[in-house]
Image (cartoon, rainbow, N blue to C red):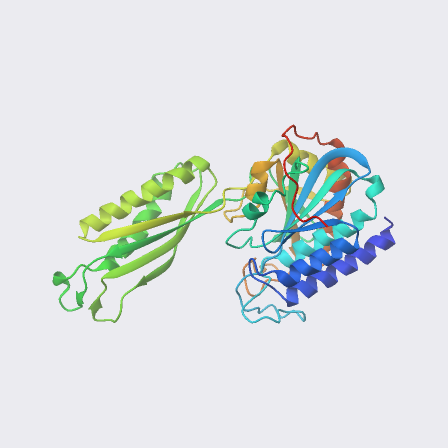
Length: 403
């Protein structure tokens, strides 16, 4: 494809991104976005299928033999009222693309459309995963259960995620853990209500809850190897009725983030041991619930090295990220089924020293970086299927409803 043709694609990518940004949709509600993706892929001659309610899969078969490479972009927005000041700000109250998923979708769509015009130069098969509900409750597993990693079996899977911490157009990645696991807990403390003037006749759950909040922080500081990170955060404390009433019930809700699977599995028993001890000491009882969420994203070292080499061969700047993020990503599930590579794409706006981070209502990005994202997907699509060895896993049923 000529540079002039690519420039036209880049212009279309910006238009798509702004169109999606103006009409954000929450998880499993991405009907407008899915329709745009499906119509655009179909018009480009790419096989399409609807999966996982609002997910879309595109399949592009190259003219030469090779492996199967998948790219993933997430489509959902967040429940935030936008305050970015952009002229194309969200038109939907209390919903905003504050994590760049509009950019992810637009970049992958641009790459797919441009690659469809070059299929005679492509090896293997390309799959384009447009995923719903990354922000919750999770769309990766439903897509996998629908068969997107099979028929043909995916040999490698890659994604881009925008980052305001990297210079615009610069990519970053690392071997191994790229993001943390994400698990949630809820602790319900039961006591005995009473008058605030006569606490000895009651069992007050609020000071019990306060003691639990402080004590569970010592799991990270005193029970876990400091080199094996864990974060336990209490985000909700709910209890009490009135200033002079002893609360008979208080609820704590929080999140647990880990980079090590062994540490992750040990946290529930450690947490419950502390809760049980404190509640017994204060004559209270408790209920505790754990909800295991996304695992840690693991970048396959060999596949990541090949991806980085392909980007650098295409004159893209790639830097090493020294530390993983304690954020979570359900791309982890795709990377459990095939070698994976999670790449960050810098979108920092020039001249802003302390930019609003993702999930901020003021989040903005440098749209000039979108061209770099499209170029990155294209570079990987041309290089990896021709050189990355196909896996030997037996094939299975095809993705349903391919048109």
